Image (tube, rainbow, N blue to C red; front, side, top):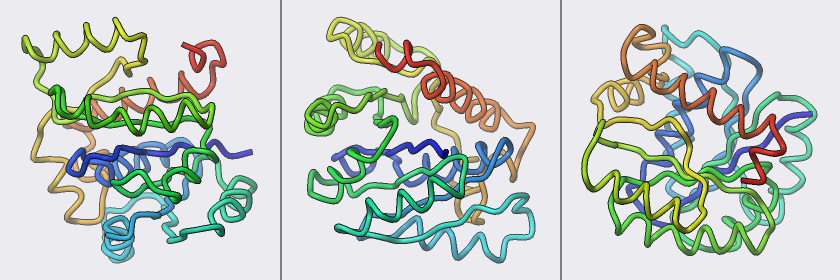
Length: 216
């Protein structure tokens, strides 16, 4: 039975779609993956079209679009056919975002390591609590070390929120791979960016596979 990850954050510009594609390509090294676009902007769908003609695409990543009440049924269908399903959600708190969160085994909330992004995540985190779904934060476009990042880490810990142990830095490799319909693990498999994505993949799988970790 496939595991469902909803990538959700009500703040625009958090890098949701990029994260969906990078994790999707990395997870496809381990199993079958479906990507589900529920964002009206349809950036993930556009990326899927690019991928269809990308010579370097090493694995099949099935991308589809769905919204509204059809989402629950689509997730049930995909769970029986794929190992992992990743949902790209709208950058707003609406019924589609709620349906995606409700259907997820884990909600991944990307944010830049800055106070406005953490504040903006409040609505998403509130919704995950209401739907009784586990959520984990992920620093995106993060500096290796900074006072601000450490301050945010301390605030997250003080609030007993869960932060993924791996983070993604601000690297051009992610955008370059995305523009080709690829994950960075395909476009530049030996790069630091690819290492970061694989580290995030492993940290995410630990959360998915360990019920105790999901409870933290």
